[in-house]
Length: 291
Image: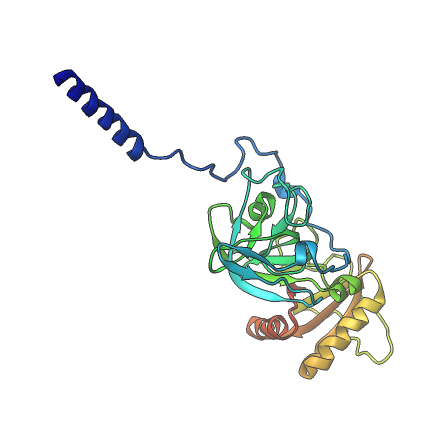
């Protein structure tokens, strides 16, 4: 009788131990132990016009009781909020668009933008910008606006955790006209004050447009196009929305590109004020150029 009682107590103790055992932790995300070298040199995604199709990756869906209705209009949506990134846990798995996720490609996830889309992502803390292809859904945490691939987060210096970003979807018109192209050239930080090339920029004569000489001073570059038509269209857009800036608009031909610039400004404050208006009203990202 005493033996049976001891066995029963022992069995009860074992059952309680099993019931209170901490479950094995879920697989954690993060980088691989040995990421490929030179990921800073991974080129940005190159935007191209990809049709927006209803259904499939763009049909409404539900996550944790929250219903998401993807946007289907081709518009230059803009948002500010927190960015996160996802890595090895999802590497090689299928994205919402049906493509295979590659943490070393320049891609991203957004909960509502059309799939696929292209986006400019800017880290306001350091001014770095990248272009990514949005081909997945997420993130779903409150306050987060985009989930970046490992390489995109690395180039923006966001691998240390969640951080604020500014994001802009590139519309078909942005892609068609070349307005998506960011300056300076790939590999050069966009926040630094760029120096003009040694060869003087050549003013481009064009009808019904004011052409100014590339005089010394502070300038804002707002676009660069291989075709003159793109530069003309951008100047018309700025002049139509910010008439007070029209006298400062100039098209210069430099290193095979037609560069649209405003200036010269007599102070850094005035240049920054104009840049802020261009960003807020026309979603442009001016580059400060000093000659």
